[in-house]
Length: 217
Image (cartoon, rainbow, N blue to C red; front, side, top):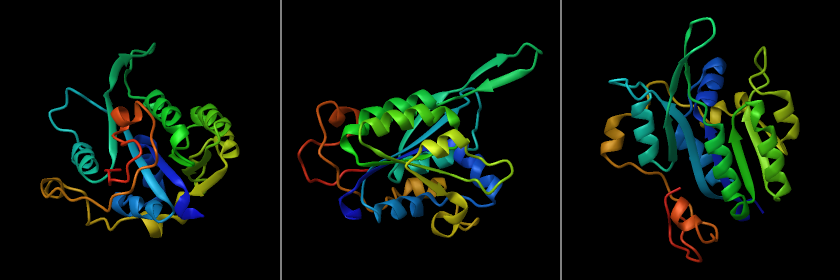
């Protein structure tokens, strides 16, 4: 039954932003949590993004702060700047490794994972998770030209979630943006109950072993 499924969400922030921007809507991250809390026991919701360290102000910082106070486990790292062979300044901030490690470590404790990304580099990760008995869904879109999801990733997934069809459920009113006032108020959505965790998971993810206490997702 859906209520017995232990679910974890893994959001590739940059990839999801590019996808929904192309589709013409913004994610309401509170509604996103509630959507998957309704599908089972939401164990964790991770959000991954790289940040430019030397910027005095980052436009993504209010969102990061809001997510961190409202049920998401935010994972960040600084971007790296380099100059390519043509002398052009490039900024690199790939979070694939961080996402993959967290997913593999959490795999024994969940039944389903949803990866919000169309990056074909995650195909091998999806296959590895499936070998561990995890049902893996990929959320992106094929409605754009070209599609925002790599074909090999979509084919490897157990389920493909078309984000264009989810807009009415997880989209937000443009006037209702996460802001610092929400952070200051300590606003939090309903919490999910944890699955049984093993040694190390209590320390790494904040899941308490063999307890039914509420924890932050």
